[in-house]
Length: 296
Image 1 (cartoon, helix red, strand yellow):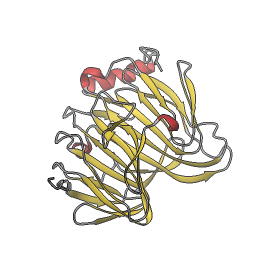
Image 2 (image 1 turned 30 degrees about the horizontal axis):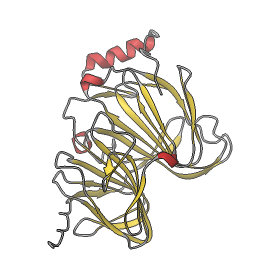
Image 3 (image 1 turned 30 degrees about the vertical axis):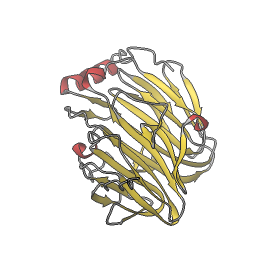
């Protein structure tokens, strides 16, 4: 029998520490994708990744993100821990609990209210924006609520758990296969556990790791990264390889195939031209923003 070859390790471009900033109605987040540390071409099709670090809030203390619009992207709210309410202007509403995820395709337009009326307690979550292709920015909006128990969760190696929110890992596919080919995986590793995650093919040139817990050594040269740090991998093909540190390791892996399209971004609107952005504001100001009722 031929001995299986170890996968080629994907080189690391840089490790950095995202700065904290205020978001929504005034809560503190860590922004990795979408910060000045990374160029848009580094992270295409991802536009933004914010972590709400684990925080224990008193009842009514967490302000949430009151009513605001979106157009032109997917927004993904992954609620790692806690309870987060959501409603939109068309009467859709729901609650995300520990480990739940909401994949929202804003497309032609959504107006929603997130996380207000928080009952208090621990909150830890992630908000991610993924660009939509120009041809699909005005599609009807849609939601997919993924309950924690329904998200495929596997053990690809001893001591390594992979929660597959989008894309695939070790032959197991996610429930969500978005329009844009992406991988969004929450990897949790016990102390000293190791794994090499292979991306589907060489077209997945974008690859970012956001560490939220513990520490580890990444890549063939064992670059260190700990909670609150982010790794940008190079665009060369290769597996994402790591060994967890003494306290274990938790991180989000975001990988994808770039759209390579113009991005014109103004606040909650991400379009392809300045004229389309202007139209967003005109629609919003004249009460014509919502073009379709979002479907679940």
